[in-house]
Image (cartoon, rainbow, N blue to C red; front, side, top):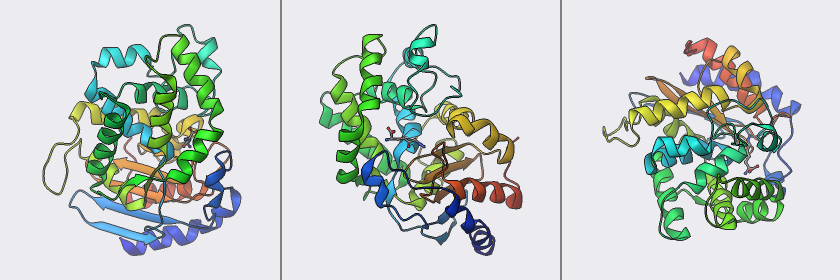
Length: 305
Ligand code: DON
């Protein structure tokens, strides 16, 4: 397996030159464009790594999958889906447009920023601190890594540059999709995006989703089967934003990207894959990361369709 991973990494290294690291969140500009790493954790708990798998980066939009799972565990599903939809938007991740033009004004799905801000607002807790602690605990449990924490430089940077998210959140509050204090919700959203992880953490979380929510190491149930199915389904339809259709055709694996450069992929009953490559295409997906997953899908026969 390691030989295949190395081969796939080497052949796709050239693609880092075709993208750029994210710059709209100023702190993300510090990433190294050439970094590239792949980690696979399979259902027998084997861990395979090549390249930059120890490099830390922020989880960004990949957090939306986990917060969605939490929102579904914390609330009645009918309530969740009365506030966020189930359809791909076909628009960029930070688009505000459909919040005005949709009949219901409801955000299309929980993977775009508007929908994710809604799911973040649904996390339960008596105080903002309690919500943050619960969230952190859940991420650490899913990744089996107690060292996961917030990168405060990225968090501050998101906070000062996040006016587009702020605008969406106020609109969502105005239209009844968010209750409570908007700045508090945004604060938690910026924190979840600023969690620092590596490719191994992504592979682990991906495997926990692949196993329908059961920890393959000790058999513990972390997420219910139905919630894990819903999360993977959203990954297929909306996980790569307005490139989700093409990704499903070419790769055929539930996956979620983040502008920090990570992609988390989850092959049902088989493996979790974490890829890190901060050079992004125009849609905000890791350029080499997408190519790597395409090759892995072919070589390891992972297409779920
Ligand atoms: O809110 C934002 O724009 C970022 N914190 C997350 C966006 C993101 O990761 C989009 N992914 N490709």
